[in-house]
Amino acid sequence: MNRLIFLLFPMFFVAQVFANTDPDDVLGFWLTDDGQAKIEIYKENGKYSGKVVWLQRMKNDDGSVRNDKNNPDSELRKRPILGLNLIKGFIFDRGKWEEGEIYDPESGKTYDCVIRKKGDKLELRGYIGISMFGRTVVWTKTTHRP
Image 1 (tube, helix red, strand yellow):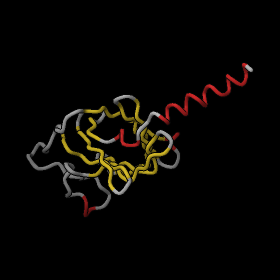
Image 2: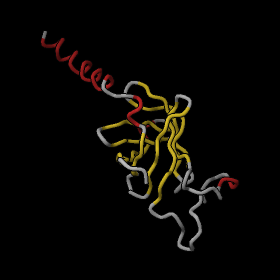
Image 3: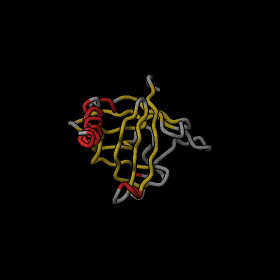
Image 4: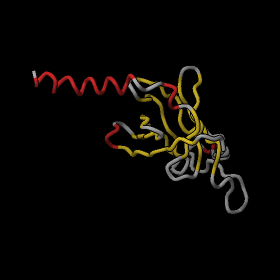
């Protein structure tokens, strides 16, 4: 009997975590881990995406607008960072948002990504191939639009 309880308890705990997560909990404004940007996560056509709505540094040192200068597509290098969609295509499944991708304008690279919510934090795990070989950043919920 003790063995059965030992085996069932973790399953019950995991089920409670999934049951208490609302798919729309990810919606709203999030401050990036370095405090340099705020991202608005929104839902469109049943999928979750996010765009840059505020930057700590809106302009470069020369006064020009900060653009997506590291994008591998030369046609996209002139688009401004402000308003840029960084995350797109996420669906909610069993307590996490997945099957989407995250774009890093600092490197110009796009990664597969999984998002998990823990309290007022989002853990975004970007990776190529399998998530074991990736990097996690943590964004913090913010209550006001920039």
